[in-house]
Image (cartoon, rainbow over all chains, first blue to last red; front, side, top):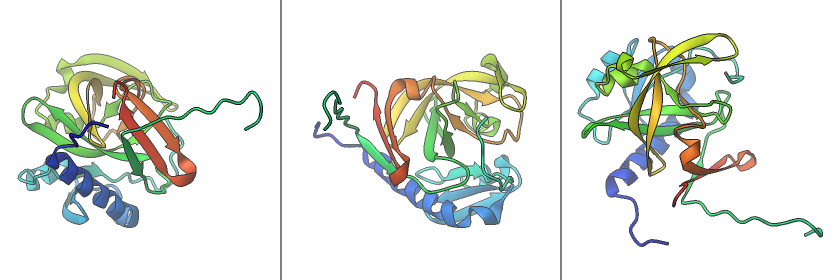
Length: 79
Length: 141
């Protein structure tokens, strides 16, 4: 196995993303239909458009995880 | 081991424990375009999707002019839609992959999908859904 591991920036981002996914598993249902921004397990912004949410988290480093919570609560059955 | 069976051993660089969810298997990823632009989002892993398709809003945040990309019509179980291909870097579980991915031609496209061409064809991918474990390496790693 090579001795050189991932860059620290990658590790920070990976850790933050894992925390964000944990947060989503608990809180997703409260934000159906909204765009949200997460930094780790911290909710930074919510809004009805991606543009307004991105604008509020542009300075975040690593970049905040920005996503729209699907409004459909039924199970996904593929394309 | 029964006679005639063959044991395959696979090695992967990364393991990810995903959450149990009714929306499918989701991965946090980052899309990079150009020197400094990047967005982080959540995408579904879909081995039944031919390509990687993302919501238009991410392309706009990356500064891409969506319609300047390679136009492609996609079919789904419920209809058709237009999307446009752009060259980006997909960063997932610490693996960076140069790829052509598609951005939906309209706003409020409902989801982001990691499919065969552009992601799975550049990776070695393992899944043990019983354990909620996803394994990933670059294909050439």
